[in-house]
Structures are given as structure tokens and as C-alpha cells.
Amino acid sequence: MDADLIVGEVMPYILRAIHAYGAAVLTRAEDTAADETVRAGQRLLRSVLGAKTARPGIEQAVTALASAENDPDFQAALRAQIKLAVRDDSGLVHQLAALLPQTPNQSSTGGRSPVITNNSGQISVGDNSPNIQVKRKFWILPLGFIKITKNAGSAATAHPLAAAACTVLVVGSVAGGVVLSQPAAAGLSAVPCPSAASSTSAPAGWSVTPNTIITEGADSGICIQSQTQYWAGIYLPHVANANYTVTVTGRSLYGWGVAARATAATDGTLTGHAIQYELGTGSYRDVDYPGDTGPRYPTSVNSGWHTLAVTVIGSTYVLSLDRRQVAHGTLPQTAEASGGAFIRVWNGGAAEIRIPVITTG
Image (cartoon, rainbow, N blue to C red; front, top):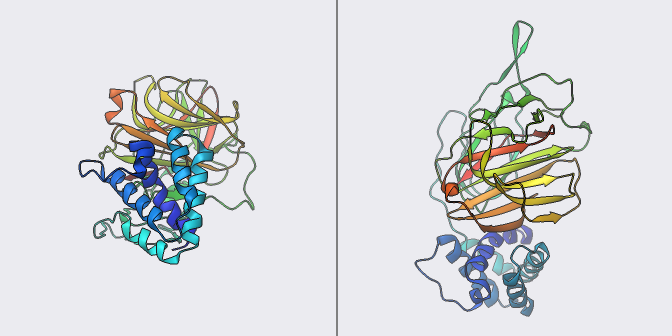
């Protein structure tokens, strides 16, 4: 396991521990009553601090981050210090890997359901299916063949997404995560959601809110288009496990968002916590629905493919952009104790997405 991979594995746990205890995480004893994710973060941080290559900058980076948890610069500074320590001590890589929480024995259900363990490359399921990159161990990846059809005259033809499961449910570690591989630049359409595209269906298990149109995407995805409705999109009503991550890769000329612990009223109005990628404001936003305001973080936005993710664990949330944590906090509404997922577009805009991924654990 290389330095980048192991640092990517341990950072979510260490960040959870810092969120729980602040700078006191540097000296606080492990509390058996604490969440296992927090305790794992304490053990991992102690291991880094106790390594022979431990750098004084690690403690300074932890202290700085504790005072501004959502600051991506401070997060990057801590990550860089840990990476330097790991790079200079090959034994630390194995030590940290051994401390990462382990998953139970793997099993699978269904004739086309692969079991995946420690795969850091790519896997494909279904005929001509898009690739999925798995970043750590998972229990089950039940990917059956789900067919979506469109009308072509009197005949029914398979939608481009029909070759793979349209809702991927991965039961396993939230911290590890699953992301859809982004398509290569060569041969892709520069404009998502062509205006003359044929209508199609939402992914299996997802429903379409009022004033929303689903069409074929320009690059084998599907397009979610708003008909000037403030709330528009697709909605997964329920996720059985209250702790999960919603991960979606998509692109838009306008803006789009992904929410977890979402519940929808009949008019499509939402409750839930989301990350929005907003081209109009030149930022991503931490937003709690049904409100539409929240902290904005200016960034270089564009209409290319990006991966948005929302993780909910207990009463806390973590937002990620392109597999990098960008914000976290406490869910402000009691209604957000359970729910499903929502992919949002608004005010006549549209977004092209690939298969939504729900990771539970």
C-alpha cells in the first residue's frame, strides 16, 4: 500500500477524532464509550505521533485544524505532514493498515455479484458496464443486471445504463468509500444534457419529483432537468442503515446538489443535508434543506465531471468534493435522523449524472 493510499484511508478517521475532541485529541485517552470511528482515529493518530519519523509539524497541524475544522488548507497541511511521516517509514504503512477497522468476512448474493477484498484497481460488472474503483474492503457489492428501456417507435431498446445496476448498494465501510471512475476526456461531448435527447427512466429505486424530466445524457449517463421548478431532481426514499454515504459523479452547466437523510414532500420540497456545486456562484455550498443558504466555499468551478458525496454518521455529516473532505458538522434538524437520498437541480437547470452509489456501514 503506497503513501497516498494509506493516508487517504486514515484521514477520515483522524478527522473524526479531531472533530470529537479538538486539540485535546493529542493527549486524550481512548474512551471505550466513544464511537468506534472516533476511537480508530485516536489509535491511528497515536501511531503516527509515535513513529520514529514523527514530525513536530503533525502536532502543530492538528492544533491548527482543531481551531478551523472546515478549512481545507489546514486539512491539507495535516495530510501532508502525515504523508511525509509515512513516506519516510515503510513500517508505518503496515502499522497503520493493521489499525484500520476491519470488515467481516465477505459474501455475495446473486449470480453476478462479485466479492471484492483489498482491490485498489478497477472492477467491471455487467456487460459494458462503467468501471468502479474500490478503495478498501467491502462486504457485498450486489450488482445485478437491471434493464431500463426507452421507446423507439414500437420497439424497446436498452438504455446505455442498462448494462449495469442503476442503483449500486455497497454494504461496508463508510470511511473507505466507493467512487465511480471518471470517463476519459477523449471523445466526450463538451456539453452535458443535449436538448434533443430522448426521454428515459430514473435509476432503479429512485423516483422523479414533480416538474423534472429524465433524458439520455451526452456521454452514457442520464440527465436530470428542471422545468423551472425550484425543487427538482430524483429521490431515493429510504436507506435502511442510518449511517451511509451518497456518492454521485456528474456535471452541469448550471449547478447541482446531492443530499443525504433526505425526505421529500409531495411538491418535491426537501428536508436533508447537501453539498451543492454551483457554477453561478463560483463555489460549492454546505446547505441544509429546505433552506437554500449556507456556507459557500469559493473554488474553481467548471462544467466537467465532478464527484459529490455526503456521509452521515449519527448526528454528524461530512461533505466531499472530488474525494476530498471539504466540510463537516452536526445535522441541525431532528427530521434528519433517517431518510434517503436526493440529487437536485433547480430553476430550469440540468445535470448529467452517472450511477448513484449508496455506501452503508
